[in-house]
Image (cartoon, rainbow, N blue to C red):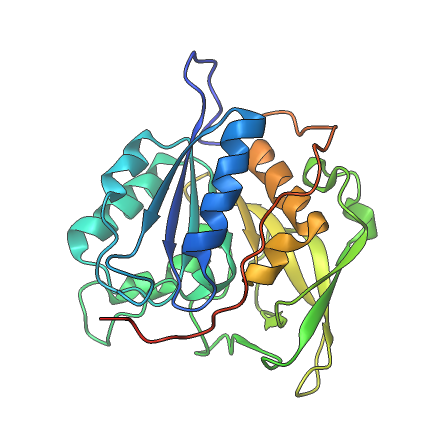
Amino acid sequence: MGFSQKKSSKKPLIVFVCGDHEYSGEETLPLLAKTLESQYGFRTKILTSFPDQNAEKDIPGLEILKEADLAVFFLRWRVLPADQVAHIQAYLNSGKPIMGFRTSTHSFNYPKGDLLESYNGFAERAFGAPPGWGGVAKHSHYGHNASTDARIISEKANHPILTGVDPTFHVRSWLYRVLPDYPKKGTEWLMMGKAVNPERPAVDQPIAWTWENEYHAKVFFTTMGHPEDFSVEGFQRLIVNAIHWELGLKVPEKWLGKLDINIPYRGMVKSKN
């Protein structure tokens, strides 16, 4: 790997980069960060789209990524300026670990011919995920009225990230379709999802995986991330474990109890201004 957690008097810094229109990552991730600081001793920094989740062209503060030990992305169809994208690319180039949630499969949405159009495929390079929504990968989902039964892949049950995670649990996220071409070859699938009450014929899909990307970074990605998922204890432990694993730290064997994260689904709403 291109990065290893060095012994330091400073606690590891986790930077959360939020801007997803729909799933309230700017509300769920700060609550997760609060627990990571109080219970696990990490430092955290939350970056959000300005002035609100619908603002696609500005995430102030991305320069802090150069100090991050782990960057966590929850983005959807941003069109950030080149100077801000440069901070994200510099982080990728560093080979430090990276994590992504759900709509980060389509983090960017630059128009055809834009100098930054290639970043529409960011998720493929960073996470081994489909390179954007639809397109040749036909990345889609099985309907907003569906939800997902999540299960650990039995052969992967001893992976550190799955320590203490319930073998099966239910999440509100409607299942994302990533097969047959994604996740990319070389990814290690940890969990599968089965669509519950799908609106069209559904096939079980990988919903959580690890990888080493082309920048030699440790990767964890999940297509879960609906705000109600964050209230599910199995999902909570999966994410806390993954953060420790990404940083090269021992995954906690003792779970300190269900986290108080209860954010209702907002969906797509217009900005107040």
